[in-house]
Length: 231
Image 1 (cartoon, rainbow, N blue to C red):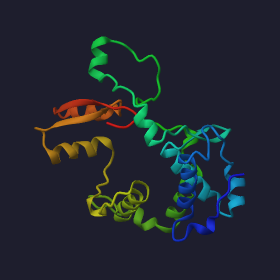
Image 2: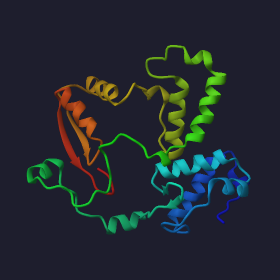
Image 3: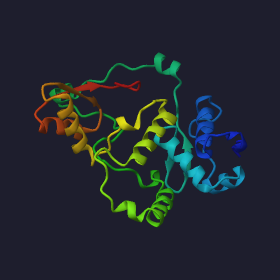
């Protein structure tokens, strides 16, 4: 069974050490595409950590596309291309949405669904969410009834800044992070901040609601094609 020396985590959190160890094995090819990962409870017992630690590590790997899951069957390694392979096999840029609409041609194969703003039930860490919710309801009752600061609760902004540094290598001041009440609110603020005279680009394919918000605000919106390497 897959195993790691968790005592080597040092100052790093256990879940992040486990996440990073599995990710490195996937990128190095030591874990092959579609290989089944150990079930959470036996894996946690073997490593000598809590099930929550394994759940959090798997959740982060799942969010970043390193693994995939199938209900009642478990977690599996995704097929990951190395940077060299991505450059060699880089496909031609896809047609823009406007071009596709002009030709009235539907894509022959659906590889992603950007229409539904929903998660698969199996992808959400319900047990972790429930544990945190119980702790907050038990220890922070008074805080829950307070009015939030206009940019969002500082603890949340600090946690977001830490996540950006840990998983994206971005050094962001929490004071530069703004938490808002959803997509409509935040993108409306963005237009007000940058100006109604600007032209705004959205990823294609991408989250369709963003372009609808721009159009509702009567600003110019352009669709920018994406391939597997980004915009």
